Amino acid sequence: MALRFYKIYDFSSHGLEPQELNSVRTIDIENKLICLVRIPDGYFAIDDKCPHAGARLGLGKCSPEGMVICPIHRYQYDVKTGRGLPKQGDYVNTYPIETRADGVYIGFEKKWWQF
Ligand code: FES
Image 1 (cartoon, rainbow, N blue to C red):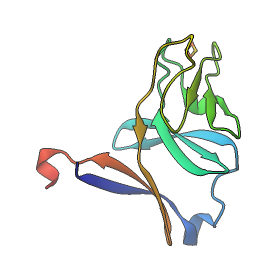
Image 2 (spheres, helix red, strand yellow):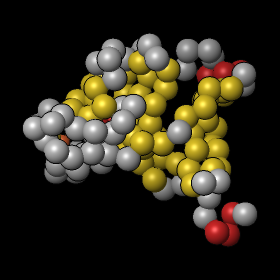
Image 3 (cartoon, protein in one colour):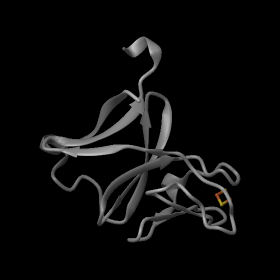
Image 4 (cartoon, rainbow, N blue to C red):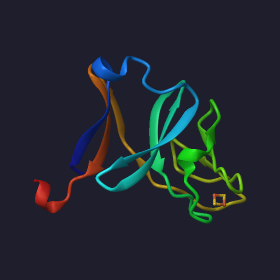
């Protein structure tokens, strides 16, 4: 799977700690809303849209263990696997993140016209 990477944070302009630890936020990459998470293990990215009823996960909270909690009905999703709690039986997509010397990047599968 070929990936195209987009820079989310540039350390030279955003600083070395551009996002608070154990926080979530919504970012827009090419008109796709992504929930960007920072926990002690690093940055992670999942779909921003909660599969339960469509709330924005980027407005929720995140535990240090990496569970994103939806702001509406408090469903939870693991940022590393995308899986919801067993009783929920649902999931969100995850996206690769790379922390490089100059910043933080997110990868999306390349479309046929991007090769
Ligand atoms: S909308 Fe997310 S838990 Fe209901």
